[in-house]
Length: 461
Ligand SMILES: Nc1ncnc2c1ncn2[C@@H]1O[C@H](COP(=O)(O)OP(=O)(O)OP(=O)(O)O)[C@@H](O)[C@H]1O
Ligand SMILES: [Mg+2]
Image (cartoon, rainbow, N blue to C red):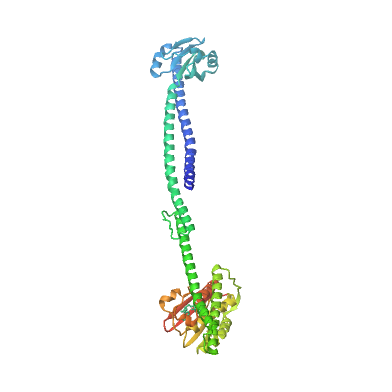
């Protein structure tokens, strides 16, 4: 249905343009030919009459004996009239009804004005062009000559030209129909293809792709649809993966909860101390689930762009020192020292203070979590445009092949061991999003077994 419509629309548009050009053009050509032929015929008749007048005047009177000479030149009928309006001689070709061709009024007009031109149709519907001229000798009207020429030859020529014009017009019209049908089909085919493909994509067949056949707007549209399908596929894949990850992440602590509550419920312990231990595991797992769900919510909101930033001037050095104080206890428990250094007394950025602190805390917790011994150093500096904050540790480091994925959701380097450390792999994904929302970026450098350095850059105020 759709196909027919666009084909027909395009085809009709082309045909219409064609007709709009062809019809006026045909009309103009026709007019040109008609005028040209008639003018030519009239001119010939006029010339003949003038010629005869000249010859007669040279002979000083009417000279019917000139008629045979005239007949040599033309097929026109020649009539010589004397001063009284009577026929003084006719040529061989003159077989028309004279009273129709030359009326009394014509003779009067000829005497008065010296010449006359007119068109007459006889009883056989034949058209004649009549040209009359008076013969004047010594200022005296001696009579006149009338030349009458049938227009049938001219009319025949015109109608044969019209026939040719019509044939050419019909030929052109048929060609235009053929051409516009092919053109319309060619134009509409990729559109139809795209329409089908988008329907497939809408139905969920996201691996549908359109063959890009041209570099024009239609080609660009095909590329755009392919990109859309690819994005949708990526989105769907990552959503599926995300859901799988969440289920997996929740399953482990929930299994623990189930197992340990069963033990406590069925009193499968020996001592009160043991019971306390189990309850503590239950609590730790519950807390873990809680944290995970909080992180998930935050990440979901971030990804939907629903999190709002409350931007203000934030002094990074004091903010960082504050954050370091908050994690100092934990670092101390592991025997780690945290040093802070800044190239300037104050570094001010435009940021959401709470989010900025969250970013720094997240990186500090990671450094503490993944460092067994050594130290953590924090360095703040700035260049013309950005503030730069780096957190380096002397911890386990990250293998090079894992580095590109470190900011992905749920990505952890040591999947089995990470449970010991308690991470779910969402921290860096959240950090990355926040830094991005601040118009900044985050980089990581790491050497396995030697340590890791995270550096964030945020535009200065
Ligand atoms: N400073 C670091 N040194 C070594 N490895 C690190 C460091 N920071 C991050 N990693 C690696 O990157 C992974 C992802 O870090 P991320 O902070 O996203 O998750 P997590 O710390 O495991 O869990 P959480 O969601 O609780 O933060 C970690 O599991 C760890 O393997
Ligand atoms: Mg972390």
